[in-house]
Image (cartoon, rainbow, N blue to C red; front, side, top):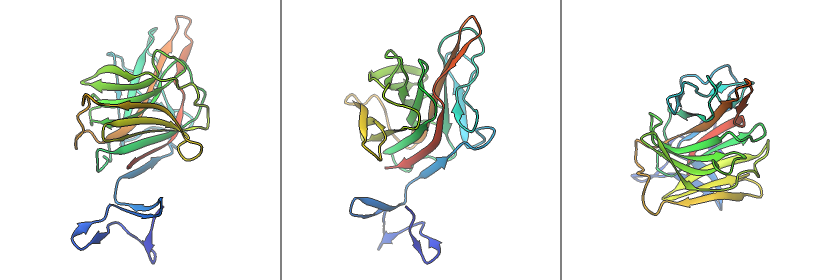
Length: 233
């Protein structure tokens, strides 16, 4: 919710020399000085606000299809074309932030996902993977391009039209289904060993996707995503 003085939006607020970060009415947030980015993907390509990366030495990267975030075309007959897109035009102001997205199509055995605490090169990040595959779902970390599963979780409850939110506060990471209505915490990971090193270089959010192709030529894609939002908490 935005607040204004007459017709002028308020960009900064302070009390004396102290900057005010948030203004609330009870439990309702009225205004925040933090990052708040939205993208509805209503165009032909991701564009310059996004940085893409493919992993496992594969060339596939995310794209847009029918105005939705979509996994890139698998180039050969190989399972596990994993890829990411980070919204690198704007970083969060703090280490505590959240990404949310709408699940646009049915889940598959490929991984759709939400990314927090990423660096600009998309080699370090934390990913919440949403898929019908129990071997791939849950919360993962990436460190210098290498992935580790930190928390397994069943994510098959997500259906088209659901909202997924992945948020981090301190060392606690949570994947939430429909956070604004009958919220369900799907996965929680507490980074007790400080595996993730937060800081100003790791304040980007983004999205994850994967695809594969059978020898018959049939391709499988992770669920399409829509209505990306990234904000400080």
